Image (cartoon, rainbow, N blue to C red; front, side, top):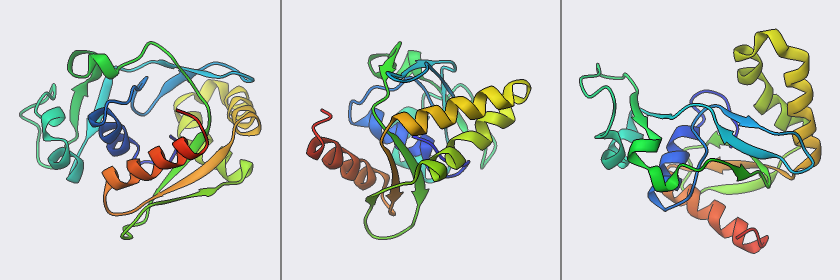
Length: 174
């Protein structure tokens, strides 16, 4: 999952964990080079705030910062609280760029390779400032070598995850 801050990556990760999916992390992961890219964990913390804290209260209740200020993100250690869902590595089969729509239902559209790079690169390059050309090339290589989609998430992240599950079953991904 790729997207700008506030696009729903953490909320969708929490939804996926609640349904038994595996993850290698929230926000940033290490990705090997194509043609068969694999995701590896870097950080062990998922961050939830606002609506996601209420929807996934069981996860938010395990936050490292229980006395957080209103609006502060709940920092939830994945390996301690979702150990069965926290994988050492996972193959990457496609890139889904997230966008919150607030609409009644979610949908998936094909997404251009260029738009996918635009979704992947900015936050990654801001973190890895000393390796910008290499990071841009890696993001471009991933987009060139994988199917790219836009997941337009409606007003219910669990319904958005159901849309993703249906799409994956239809394409025989699992």
